[in-house]
Image 1 (cartoon, helix red, strand yellow):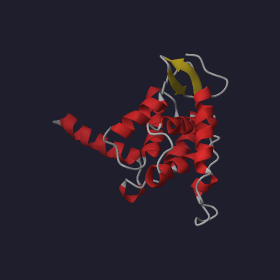
Image 2 (cartoon, rainbow, N blue to C red):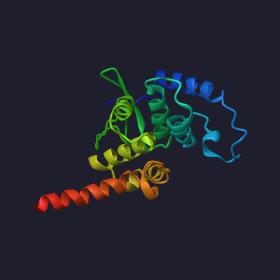
Image 3 (tube, rainbow, N blue to C red):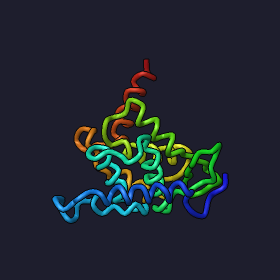
Image 4 (cartoon, helix red, strand yellow):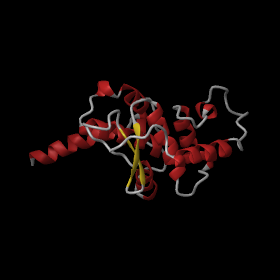
Length: 185
């Protein structure tokens, strides 16, 4: 796997699309510190809040959400704990902090398509996507200490579709308990 020095051209196009789309909205009725209002689509965490707002309030400027997936990936990369990879089979991909062991390849556009078309909750898809990326990094062998910013981003997200402010990890923990019971049978 080869990393790229900067984002793919499609990411630059996605940023331009979202900056133009975002400029159409009047946020004067919202509090000055309201997080989505602060989105710049340059890879800051506020961009995730803007994607969540698009998801539940105003829609996306692209029907297949592929630009949204690239905006999400740019936030992961700007955190300093993910990198852009050279396209793999024509698909844009990111990896963890290292392009060598432990190996992790994540295809954001494909993953967003899975979530958009699959049986995922109506909201929180990008929060869930962040959780899945962190989980995949941990699964392949990264330590929590090697990806603290991504872990923080994941655990500080707000979830509208999960009861009591829980996260994807709460659901995973509950599933693991059920699987442990099944294993004992």
